[in-house]
Length: 397
Image (cartoon, rainbow, N blue to C red; front, side, top):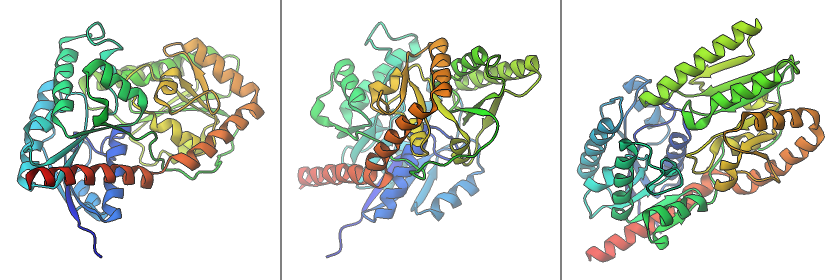
């Protein structure tokens, strides 16, 4: 018996590999595996900033996406987000799919304009902009607008997918959402060898892989290395990641580049290396003696944390990732968020206690082998999509 092939539209304001962030990697990988599994034909609705549009479309079609509908790329805060949401929703309504999967950036409002007959599922990676308080955590008018948008969106859609119980708890507490509407993935997929791989050299390579954005805390990584460089003359910090889209992200990147240049000039050697928009980050996971993830807020899970584990490397992560479930004390070293001294101490501890660090890394490797693959994640999301489609069809019968 041949299974029904459904039509799925996928909306995302940015897409891997044009923007190299965790949310972009997530939606790209899930869309690819959903298409490979054969139950859905996938129509993409997105925008591109850095790759020529024709090249991007050809690449996506080449890996199994049925069609790519591009919205004009505009940089900027809320206005560009609103215009994207309106245009993306119009394209989806024209496609008339069985369901739409939305990559839920904070100001993504497209579900509000999509035909209610189309099953709608939003992925909420985190709501970290609330800062841990529904009202007190709102730092600006922009955050208040985001709060109003996401509150309306999660109430409008048919289902909500989140990476972790931490995000589910935030949605229930701060946005007063019915917990039964929320599906928790529990883990994300990993692209990795699932074994120890290492490039030997004479340096201590500390690797921080993340999109350049204030919450990723590359500035804290630099401060930690500054505390260690006089004691460990062969230490080197690699900051590897994609450029952000917002003005805030781009200004932050410029500050990081200036700081790295100043430190390297003062030391007379390249201690801090900034690598932008790298196509294959696997080289840097192999190079790493230690991977660090000192994010200070706004993390839904922690894709790069488990990616590093898939290469068998010791991980130092902020306590943000203990909350998301990506790391714990058994498989990583946990440090206080926002504390460069604690990060430096943890790095020094790993350097001086290599056997203990590798034992912890082995436990982490075994964990990701059991729990982190994209096929499983796609299967979970496929089941949610089919359930929503079935419910919509029954309601319309």
